[in-house]
Length: 110
Length: 123
Image 1 (cartoon, rainbow over the protein chains, first blue to last red):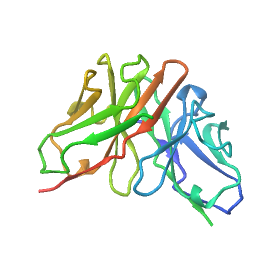
Image 2 (image 1 turned 120 degrees about the vertical axis):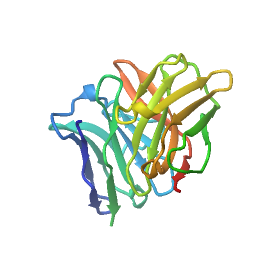
Image 3 (image 1 turned 180 degrees about the vertical axis):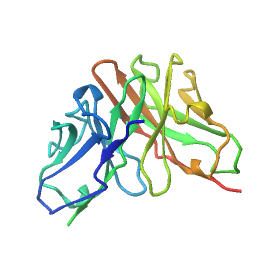
C-alpha cells in the first residue's frame, strides 16, 4: 500500500516562511490526488486549512497557501506566528473511494 | 454553524464491538455531495480515515479496516453511526466524526469536525 509521507518535524522562526510537503512512497502527487491540509493543536480536533491543492477553507488567513512543488503537495506558511505551532496533516485521495492521511508534521515556531 | 457530536462508550474490553454515533446539527444533512466520515487518532499518533457514508447509504472504507467496519445513517435524526467489531488495544484512539464533502471531480475535503471521543480498549 502506498504511504503518504510528511516531514516528522520542522521549525521556523517567528515571521519566517516554511514549506511543509506531502509526498508518496511511490509516485508523484498531482492535483488529481486532491490534496488537503489540516492543522491540529493538542487536545483539539483538526482544523481544515486547504483543499483541492490550493483553496483556503473559510476563515483561513492568506498566509497559508497550498501548491504542488515538484512531485509533492506543499503547504506554505508565510510570516509564521507563535500560534502556528501545531501538527499539520495532509490527506490524499488515492482513488477508488479511498483517502489516506500523512503521518503529520510537528511544526515548532522558535 | 454546523456542529457534530460523538457519543458512545469510553471503555471496551478486547473482542467487544464498538458502536459510536455522531449527531449533526446546524446544517443540511442529506445534500448529495455530503458524506459523513469517521476518523481516528491513537494517543500521540497521527490521523487515520476509517470510512465515509452518504445519506443515501453509499459507503467507502479504509481497506485496512473494511472487514471490521460497518456504518449506518439515520437521516430523520441527522445521525450516523460506526460499528467496529473485535476491538483490540490497537483500536484505542480518539474517534472523530466529520463532514466529508465529495464534490466528484472537483474537490474532496473533511470540512467540519466533532470534538472527538476517546475510546480505551483494555482488559
